[in-house]
Amino acid sequence: IQNLMDDHTVEIEKIAVVINSNAIDMMEKDSEAAEFIEEFLEKDVEFNACSNSLENRGLEKEDVVEGIEIVNSGVGKLTQLQSKGHNYVEI
Image 1 (cartoon, rainbow, N blue to C red):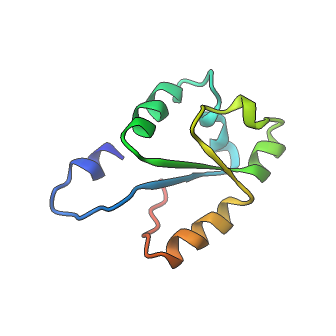
Image 2: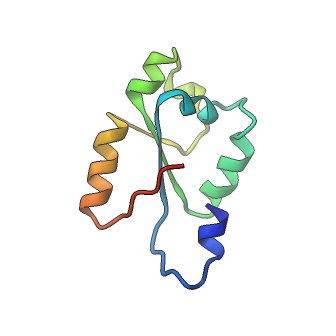
Image 3: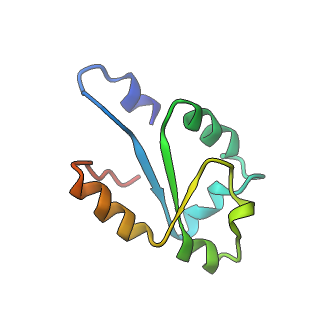
């Protein structure tokens, strides 16, 4: 994310991250990635967590870093973002 933000050869209006499957563990408040996510939330990076993945991992909205949007499905959110002109990069 930071490399993309630092690349001045690319015009970026908005960065949106969609997290699903086992990567959803990174969204937990006590995860090693929580501070990283909070820093990017402060830089207006949008984070979305798949509600299906949360449910599959036994997590509730209260378990994730504050500021992360819970979406009905990760695939659905990706589809919405792409229809608005966002590019998809899988990491």
